[in-house]
Amino acid sequence: MSVDNRRTARKAVTGDSAPREIRRRPKNRRAQIAAASAAAFGSLGYHGVSMEDIASGLGISSAALYRHYPSKYALFREELLRVGKAMTESVEVGADGEPSAPRERLRQVIDALVGATIENRPSITLVRWEGRYLDEADRQTLDEQQLSVLDALGDRIGELRPELTENDRRVLRATMLSVITSIADHHATLPTKALVRLLGSACLAIADAPLPPAEKTAEVPVVVEIPDSFKHELLLRKAVELFHDRGYPNVSVEEIATAAGLSAASAVYRFYRGKSDLLAAAFRRAAERVSGAIGPAVAAAPNPEAALTDLISHYVDGSFAERALTFVYYTEFQHVPVEERTALRNIQRLSVEEWARLLREVRPELSPAEARFLVHAAFALVVDLGRSFDSAPFAAQARVRLLMQVVLFGRPAAE
Image (cartoon, rainbow, N blue to C red; front, side, top):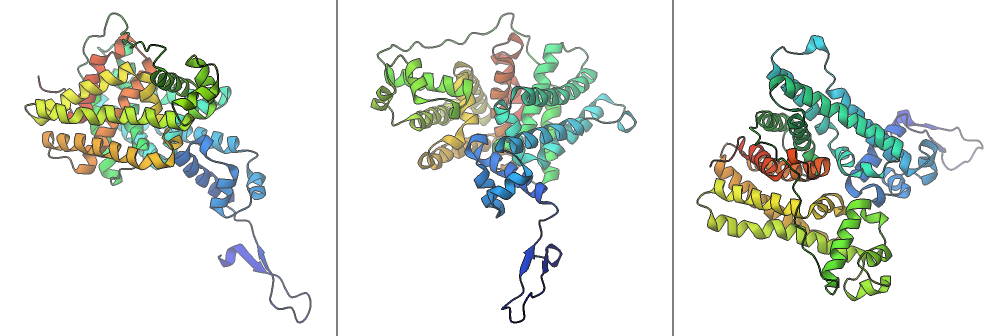
């Protein structure tokens, strides 16, 4: 403890064994609490953290923590809206400081947003995936903040490409924001300048993307019907749908049983050990869907670009067919049983490494880390466009496939 944060009281009585140390509360205690809670929420999610966890991490009592914040929700709310505000402010460039060329104006906004995202990387994951746990009024504030960011990107895209329709601009701006904020979905590292350059180049390639014509009608994924007798599979599907709609912590085994047509929660345990076992099964299925496609694609393709193009199509097809599973895969990992996490992480890591290896054969100028960042960004844009636009014709599979290609290759794939 520094001298500034302590003072020593005089001995009250001759013969006291030692002077008594009186601790002063640090002047930046509130900022320390905010930083510690942001790290905890970012790692474990809103429901995975308690006030006692945050207090323990800071070496203070729960009572001391409650003197600064009345509840865990107050901490959570403050951090999400702080980060949302930081992102909004980053794109508010004054007219006097803007370049005149449309491409440079877009690049200026992109670089500013990338910088704010890197600076707040541990908490960006909260904005991406945990905002649904905000109260309605706070969630509306966060949505307005995000819309301001999207509007800034969309305005610059419109200046650069005035021929685009409003829906085209919406797709491109959402893709850019997804690529930038995807750095919160993983722990790969790059020096800041290199990361700004990489994400900026990817976003400019997105701005130039030659979007295929929008579909005339919405795509309706074919859902395979599960007979009532296949309770094991039916339970898994219904659990994933509920986790997607309400979040894993807010779903009970009883509700899963009811959704699957079972008379009692106890019937679930004939098929799964519990709710967490259902979540682990969902994660294994999502991870193996990606990993299992790699070998056949590489074996059948004449070159790495063709293999990656096939993998992109497979990934988009699977994600559109199982939207809820794809979303749950991104949002609920902290709730997977601890004993399952290592195996799942290994499957995820190996899949990303294989995609990155193929990408570096197409683009040898990329470092291994840069290739991994782009692979994560390509994966993220699929789930982000899905939750933003669902099955809207202007965000159909053909467009999503092309945007994945542009993020990875810097251009559409070769015919």
